[in-house]
Length: 147
Image (cartoon, rainbow, N blue to C red):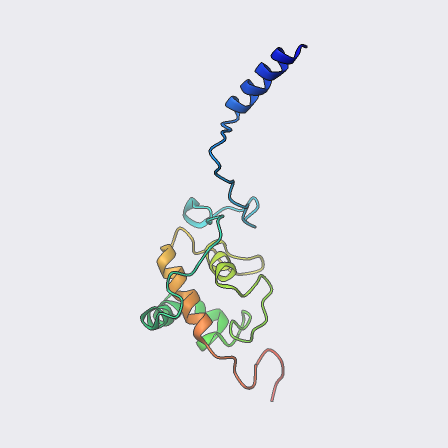
């Protein structure tokens, strides 16, 4: 194949793949894998920033949602842990940043955490994240010792 034929073939391959030189980057893949999502909606893959960070009204609404969506049934009142792990002891299996918490609530986690993405609006999930992040680490963390 001569150089012109190779170049033409490359242009066809790029065009068929939808490639362009627009400077747009492909968002990073989420950790969702081949899961079946609640409501059929996959989690966002871009870098996530909490739009309600430090918003006291969002903390109160997040607390209401935490109780109303049965989060406390597994994670205990205030998120200190019960059947599910503590959400306030500072130890995180899947990451404790706002974006990681959002993804855990949105897509669920193996061994018991249901997916709420597609059921709850993103703003409601962010309010729950804001509530959880506002909780102080208890002096006696129930997941560390029994007294």
